[in-house]
Length: 58
Image 1 (spheres, rainbow, N blue to C red):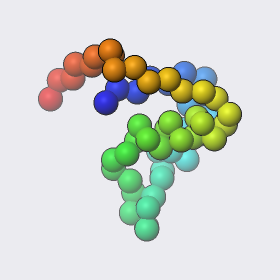
Image 2 (cartoon, one colour):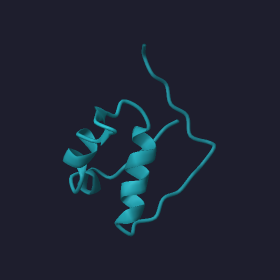
Image 3 (tube, rainbow, N blue to C red):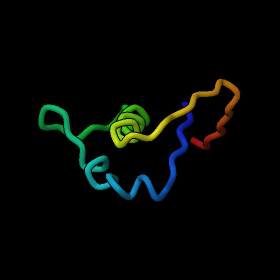
């Protein structure tokens, strides 16, 4: 998956996102879903496209 977010929007909740926990443990996956839900909760729209591509180095 590939997620792209406006930098100015991320600053509104980046600290809460970075320090998120579930049942007392720091979250280590589901980042894109959590970010998208936060964006939607602020009243912004999201879009999906199957044509995006992302390359990563491992």
